Amino acid sequence: MVSLRFSLCWSLLLCLTLFSGAALAKKDPHRKAKAVPAVQPNETAAADGAAEARLIDIYVLIGQGRLQQALQKAGSLVEDIPHFQLAQLVYGDLLAARVRPLNALGDVPAPMVASAGPALKDLREESQKRMKALHERPPKGAVPSQFLALSQRSKHAIAVDASRSRLYLFENGTGGLKLLADYYISVGKAGTAKASEGDQRTPLGVYYISSNLDPKSLKDFYGSGALPLNYPNVLDTKRGNTGGGIWLHGTPPKQFARAPQATDGCVVLANPDLERIIRTVEVRSTPVVIAQQLQWISPQAAQADSKPFEDVLMAWRNAKTSGNLQQTLSYYTPDFSSNGKNLDQWTARLKAEMAQMVGRTTQIKDVSMLRWNDSAETMVVTFGEVADGTRSGTTKRQYWIRQDKQWKIFFEGVI
Image 1: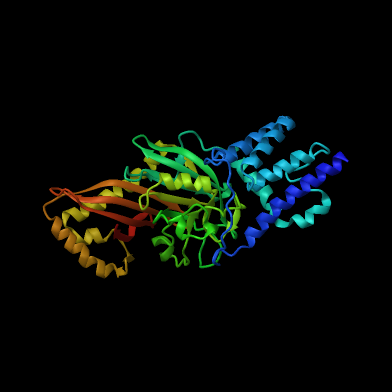
Image 2 (image 1 turned 180 degrees about the vertical axis):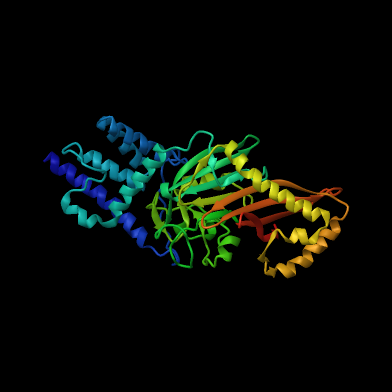
């Protein structure tokens, strides 16, 4: 009788967990959403990162064989956050463990495996991703290799590691980048490396948050809000990548988190985690690097890596300040473009700029250098250009590419 009672209890939990996940997975984000009552979790429990920390604590207790304490904590977690499906699955396992040994996470009785479908597989993968990312922590003080230099105008930065289903939030202070927090995320159903509209892939590259959408203007599907990215960026366009509408956004009211690969290309976080990011970052000045797998380096290594390119950037500035048009043009690629202008059309503007600078040295200030390496080595550079004797100037963004061991500009524009 005891075994039957716990089996029925676990079965009910599994059905509730998998049904809500399957229903939301089938939901079309482009259809008009019906109003649904939001789950109201305990306020303290819903703080960013708190739910995951409690889940990991339960895993630790299980690993130590303290199953009764783990069961108590799991029961408390699902009571506080009933729509946390992975927690419900763990709770079901712990109930089942009272009457039989468990062999794996989501140790579903054989007759129920077929009805569980892909949702059970997704929850198991989510668990593995969370555990792996929290076990394999970034080296202390290290930064993603893309962040060679970041201006103080960028108060924060974000890096996404798709292989770990993890987003890292950094604060940029006088001492450089400091890791503030990191969160579990979901990416495209088909993985990463977006190339075309509708391919259900998340793009890889260097982006910036372009706006902050009011949650009241969004469907419930997007949760607590959305931060659109500037995909396709200049490099994407150069490569012929299409599509758009790539956002950082939240989850539907009845779902705490989504499977590791569950979106149409966006990066999706639990609502409390997204809310922390929305409260923290600034639009337009916050870079977002999305990589298949982040490589972590020391700040000293980043500084050393940036020096050769910084020398080239200063050489470009010196050529432009000297008034030598041909030497300056040698830093641009033949297929250069700037908001619809080709190199010939851009040259006229460049000549006018250089004429205004005659006799004055131009300073480059507040430089950010973000590196991207895939089939080619590129650099996204943002800086202020201020001529001596003036109090203000323009903020520019350039895209450079390394060709035959030489750095060349293939895009330049004013922000």
